[in-house]
Length: 313
Ligand code: PBG
Image (cartoon, rainbow, N blue to C red; front, side, top):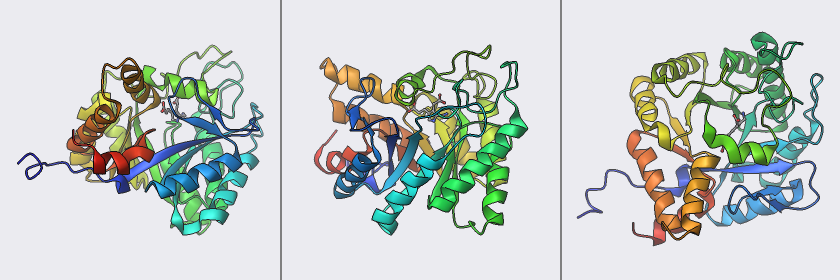
């Protein structure tokens, strides 16, 4: 009876697996802060994708982590080489989204370009740079551009840049409702991208306030108008109300990103034998779907097929 009347049925086909590719590494390195997740070299990333394909996962979100950080003249060669190499090997077997943000490129770790005093993000300069980065990633072969920077107007800028270069088939998954959250802690550790050394010590001037759900909704509506194909809510599990509203107001495909801190809190509970790991992750996925998410981005995506098939919860 429970099966018959279930309103949510999970499918591994709607999962995206994040991948970290780090230029400084010479071998795959596990993240101490993210259970079971590794930082890959380009070579080990290829092996990881191959193994994920066997587990039924074919959609990926990649986070390139470059060796050199700078304040200007940012260099995206590592990211574009990584995408070219992956696409050369896997072609249409996979769907590849590339995160677009400046935080792992800038010395100060902010997601955009700062003024010389280091007190504020320069929106226009940042958007121009992000659109240039997105273009290079799309030219390298990314199927989807996923801007996570939260600058105003970047979706329109990226869309028109891509279109001007005949890249109209490249889609955009906008981190449209991205909150300034504590739950990115393990990720910042992984990407060495926490803000540092400037007067601007947090991302509150460009990421959304958890106290303002309407702002998140307005951003989603704006990004949809500017040309986003998929709207994302992030973090996901603590923002189910936002997922639900974005879905009902825009009727666009919505992605829920179960972020590093949300994922790791379940992993830590499981390590202490306080929850069943697979069942707890699946319960959250179900909640995201119930709220209205179509797409789920999860660090445990590569387990989705097996768990969904084999585990009753
Ligand atoms: C980059 C970015 C972040 C995440 C995805 N892209 C971190 C941040 O904004 O500080 C977080 C992902 C996660 O925590 O799993 N801007």
